[in-house]
Length: 263
Image 1 (cartoon, rainbow, N blue to C red):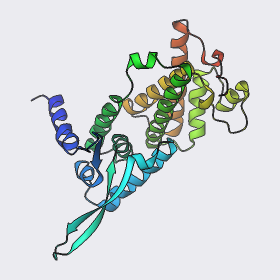
Image 2: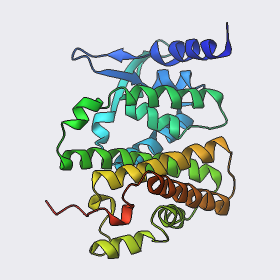
Image 3: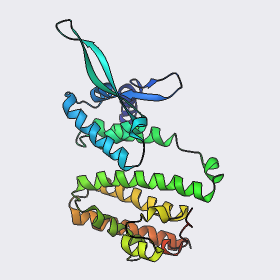
Image 4: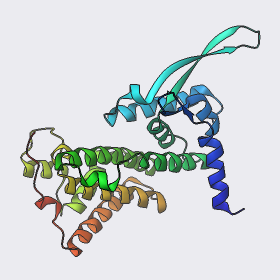
């Protein structure tokens, strides 16, 4: 048996076999079963990771009620007494966020991140469905992916040593936007104070930023980048290379793309 096949079997046993399906065909996982699969022995420690994942879900502007359903399970104690223990019914995305917040030193965490990321992508719309969307629908779809990508990048950057995330993201913007920071982009677009620049990007501009985000996260992980300044420079370099790729194929630079009209 080769190594990759062994990994696939492990993932199936650990994550696929503990998957449940309700009467409506919706998949879910129980937190305590996932805890065992991720090799955590104490609920108190695992609950801390769940809490972090809930905050991440809130920051992604996705309903936590849809992803984390708090439930109580009856058990029989050692003395034969019926007691109730806390548990959660978790969506696939909730499991992904938990894996992202788990102990990165555990090999099983990396496997879980891959498994739930792949399963989540399988639920995304098809290319043909995307083509049929209006520009506003494409924009909202890409905006959701970009926000999720930014959260995942933040977790990776944090493990690399980043503490000043505004500065970290500005390095990426500066690389992609020929020196412009987030504030510069907002001013050029004529936005009000604290208005989110992502809310004011078209689908093409969001796609360019999503590519910058995903490639930065991959490079931080693959090259095992450590130190805040090294992470910042990596973000800048990736942004610059994405800009060069756009130029090489004769595309429109992100700062020259139109800002969507208010709806």
